[in-house]
Length: 149
Length: 127
Image (cartoon, rainbow over all chains, first blue to last red; front, side):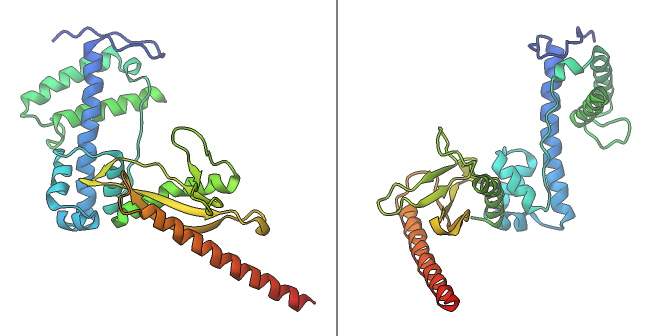
């Protein structure tokens, strides 16, 4: 698959390259999925059922289940409160100038991995548990951390 | 309100406490951090207004938290917390805010009576 990509300057240019834009959108959405997964893990670590969390938040079991599955999209107030309910705090982080930091190499690399992962039944070839989107998001996180150093 | 909502509201109040203590509260603007009560006879009460947050919380209409306080003239730089209350994030059909102001006002009256008595007692002992 040929992907046209270029490295942007460090200032905030419009994201004209669809490949870069798509990766940023995918990273944002994957990060959200990861967050919901971590909220579920936090609940399980507290040995709490969805019913117990629902009681703590004055809401229904269905609401808690929908939150964890992503069928109900949390607002920021609800996110803080559910984190509190499962004895966790959520750290909000913004990676600035993401389009300028995602290099052509990364995009080609990520695309290659994506095709490999898709072929391997939507599972990471490394540990077999991380799903495609999450893996790409983690990869981008690592790369961004590297570029920020 | 749930325990989580209470805790979240207190977290939002804390930076406002600090600003009030430092005299940096904004009384102007589209979303003022505090307002002086306009009701006649209660203009000495200040209402601290944490940010409203989301209009709904887990499907329920959210409530607004308000801390009513005063700055007594004769106690130096003291802020006197009078009442921590909530009100609907929308039309206040039951007049909840009015009730809260009355509670804050009566506490301020009680406090000033007690304060005066304590001062008088101290003066008598001093003599």
